[in-house]
Image 1 (cartoon, rainbow, N blue to C red):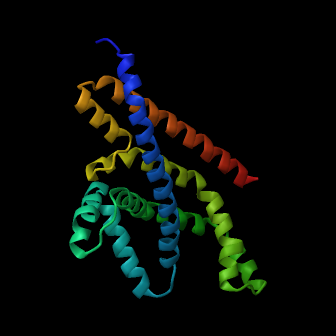
Image 2 (cartoon, rainbow, N blue to C red):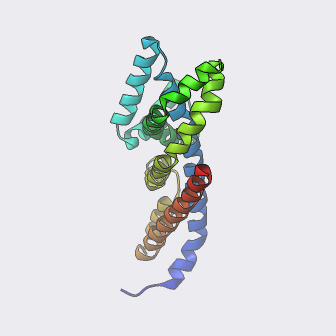
Image 3 (tube, helix red, strand yellow):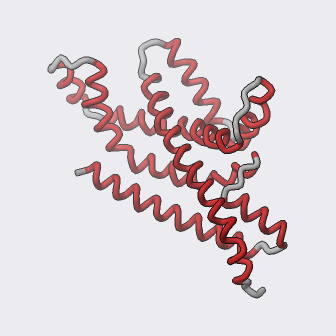
Length: 216
């Protein structure tokens, strides 16, 4: 099979459009998963079981169902209830919600890894509970969990092609559309594969740099 550089050239404008959408979904989905995961983790530490049980049930349900099912539910079912969002917004929220149930466990592990002496020192200094969390516990916990959170960023990147199922033209969606229109599959799919490898590698480098900075 002969490699067609002309097909690559024709595909590149579509590729850049898809890459932009992929990076948007990854960045926004990561922010949602990190923020919401921390909220879940903190709620699971509240003394009230009336808070812990519903949060535990919701997160277990989300974690136990496929992301693709959640995408379909949010995209096709919510409009029937009067909640309509764009395909990209729906996809970003679905990715963020799904992975927040995993980052929650990461945060919980990080919080539990903070030495008991830190809690005791904050109590001895008579720090308010909010100050204890924001100035003592969370900075140490988050510093410990950055590598694990980074792994989920890579996982979210690999799951962005699922957004194609709800009409979002990210990288794979653009490659599929181009291939169907021009009957050329090898070149666009190869470009997409290489792009995922490069983006994953660059993301891992950035996360390692962040980890080294936080460890100082």
